[in-house]
Amino acid sequence: MAEIIRMPKLSDTMTEGVIVKWYKKVGDKVAAGEIIADIETDKATMEFESFQSGTLLFIGVETGKAVPIDSIIAILGKEGEDVKALIEEEKKKSAVSSQQSTVKKPVDEIKKEIIAETPITDHRLPITNSSDSRTKASPLAKKLAREKGIDLSRIQGSGDAGRVVKRDVYPVNLSAYKPAADEKESYTEVEISQMRKTIAKRLSESKYTSPHFYLTIEIDMDNAVAARNSINAVSDVKISFNDIIIKAAALTLKEHPKVNASWLGDKIRYNNHVHIGVAVAVEEGLLVPVIRFADGKPLSHIATEVKILVEKAQNKMLQPADWEGNTFTISNLGMFGIEEFTGIINPPDACLMTVGAIRKAAVIKNNMVVAADLMKITLSCDHRLVDGVIGAKFLQTFKFLMENPVVLLGRGEI
Image 1: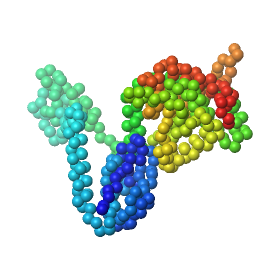
Image 2: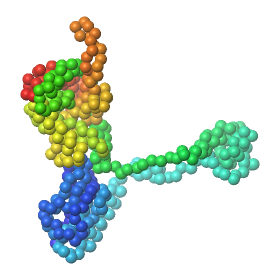
Image 3: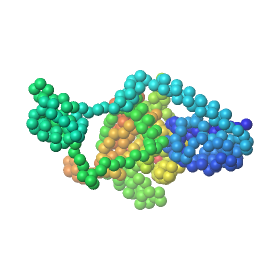
Image 4: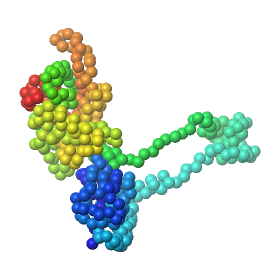
């Protein structure tokens, strides 16, 4: 008996998928466990294995096309088996589902669509070969109208007794500008990727659901810079400032569990484990692979793991286990020279920390003006879970660890 293969849900946030490549064509034999297609989700391109054996009788999605999860993408069965009735039944189900979603559409949304589809006419559009002999207009207005081919009878005058004057014609004169031959409007449109759709949806939900507030603190990085230089002089694994920040944040979260939390609607979850999400920029948007149990890992391990995950993210090789389970997220734009910025909280985290560039500045130390390496950190907080004092105490501890790397390294070997 023929079996339907549907678009699987390959990540917790996936709502639709794109068939990137079919490895089989209609009529080919398929064995259980054999890869039949590559599917692009909102986070990565993943291989899709068949769970059953048979002959590929029908392909329902073209390469490059996006369809919702649970949509029919293929049918497997016995060679020569008729699946027309099965396909028609699926089409009817899809049509009924589409009608129901239309009925449920809010009235305000329907009104907006009607307004958007209604053409708007401008009573002052230029019309050529027209007559203005019966229209009350000033001589200058008539002259401008003749020069620009404007029908004065379609202009509402603002002068005495509805007389058309210069100011009524002049805006149309501006809009009648004819560009030069080399001044041509052009643009390029591209389909929104699954990743970008999910980023837009999740961050919009976060921003408008979670009441954000922001706390910024400045950190003296002189000791951290010296410590990193010393470590990298003797270590086979090169440590970045971001690795040190991840470690310090993880240890700080252990001391401030109310920041290492999630809002679950009717309850708050305080996580005992620390999983740090690290924002990684890729061509199509942003991915957040996770460093699990970061508080217990040495800096060298964190550095190696971050490099591997960044490479996988950039090559679209991340798997669900790589991006799920974050309890706190760090976004660093310091390498781009950004000194300070705020970020949108990455659900289900209670907070997100943004990291700015390290910059030289004049400061007073021991009653002397000296040059120092400074860095600004901003904590985006969900006010449903984290109050100002909780966030401030978290940043105080984080600042202490970053400014005293000996204490930081004493809590976890290099």
